[in-house]
Length: 243
Image 1: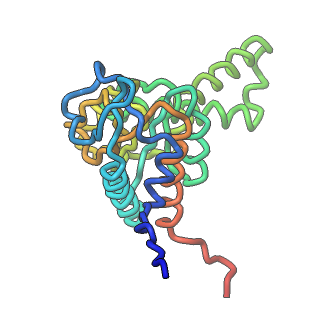
Image 2 (image 1 turned 180 degrees about the vertical axis):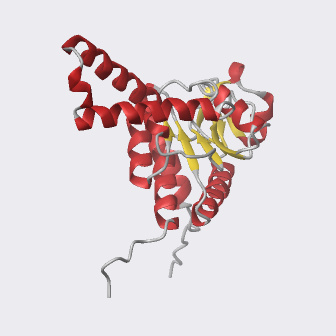
């Protein structure tokens, strides 16, 4: 009687599978790779460096544990993502998690000249209140139009940090190639930095490195969704009205 030989079962990691489907593994061309990102690289495919997703998984979890800890302590996380393709995604995550954000161009001094930025935010709120109460109606139509335009411009620049009364305790940067100034300011003010690092980034100044593709929308969606889940779970649930 013939004995059936079974092939050994190959165990797969569902988290790694999800990351692969989202495209987290794809870095930049080998010519653009920063040498200090090499510990996070598994190999090369068609002249493109491929991330070691085991390390990405490990580092992402470490970053999320840190974020969860500061949220539980009632501290503030500032979310930054200014690439056009992820702006709405960043805004939605920030709105759902009730955290401050920056999705337009980083304004120099947002952290290092915080008091000046706060003055602009206060001025914006004052204009909004005057418009709401009808106080601007005493001006001519042309002047009202100018005020409305100014309010829109201020909202675009500072709307995401309108409820940031003090410097954040940590900053999460989605796209370091566009927001190196945000990183430099955070380091100068000794604010903890969590950042997604593609293969072209120097990870040295970053406290919590997440080695992954920062260009593909699917990759960014995956990581921001994980961030959203962790923040939502860490925040105290409103039990008002419950027995």
